[in-house]
Image (cartoon, rainbow, N blue to C red; front, side, top):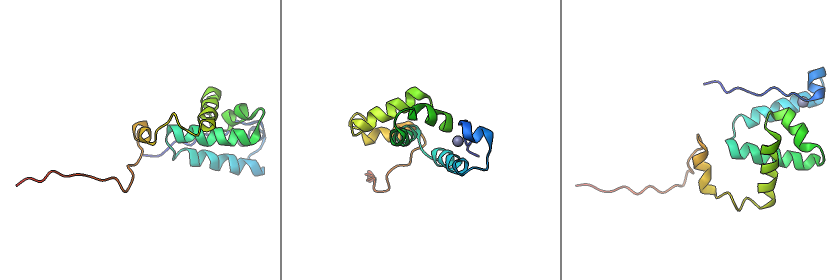
Amino acid sequence: MPTLIHECQCETCQQSKGHANWQLHHQMNVFLSRLDEQQRRWYVGLESKKIGRGGDKLLSQITGLDVETIRRGRRELDEDLVTRSSEAVRDAGGGQLPAEKKTRRSRRR
Ligand SMILES: [Zn+2]
């Protein structure tokens, strides 16, 4: 199934696709397309933090994520993700099970 990759809507990318940021923004969206929902939120939240003021709005244009979603991602990062147990990742859908997960099999005779 092909994954839809968001096209950056930031001002510079709208003007031309030749500038340096276009590839960067494009690759951010390629990367995001492989993450689950909460991982997307955290990554974009982190990128937004790097920008600082106005980051949420810009990242929203680049990634298509809602400003509120990005804000939530930043908030969760601020809390060291304590409110998000690693167990919850599996519920996000499509996430892979950890390789070292122990499976207990009942033996039948
Ligand atoms: Zn862009």
